[in-house]
Length: 317
Image (cartoon, one colour):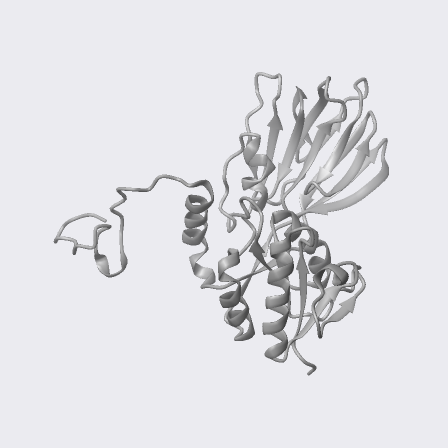
């Protein structure tokens, strides 16, 4: 067995990320871990004693972890390398919301120490596979962790589409677009479009119309085994498909976009018990959105109430 190896990626346009990359690389190297960095990022990072690798499919192959210093956009970029290699990702948030990241900048040293000590667990996040066809001809195949969005190509006009679930037409819409999302993506674009928040351990697919002109255009939550499709009406202008805001496919008139559960998940490293996912996601929602919870008197360990006093006999949690 060779030495432990981790790939370090950073948002190189952020000075904070460059400083943190130096700290992370130093601590990992001191622990005997081989640190890889992408050749495209190495000049900006300036980390000594690292191994430069091409920014391609093999960058994460054989690594134990991919450590990402940046926002959710940086994590989505890193997922393109980690997913085919089956390597877990862990992020330190330098962005705005950072739902995918595991820690904030002031906790970097602790994160690195826990990774060195192997004090982490790995969870799998469902992805979606996306195909684009026209008149039966395959135009493109791609994938997404958060969402695949069919959007209008021109700002001044709507896109006309028919939404389909499991091979049956559901509704024709004039809209700005349609978001097909995973539970992970339910706090991203789908959330902004009015979709529900879905806890990440729930297996489901979401379809959320954007600014639809129709009597029936609610957000939908369907089985993870369902196949979602969005067809661009043949008599209407074409549109564009965006996957995770990173991969773009132009949609000609008559194009058909099919979305199904992805064959490969994205693996995320977490620093605590995987059995606490539901509770930790609730806490994440409260922290990221600044939700008001003052006055909560819920259950505490040992049967105490929210104010710390013991619960009386017969008193409900």
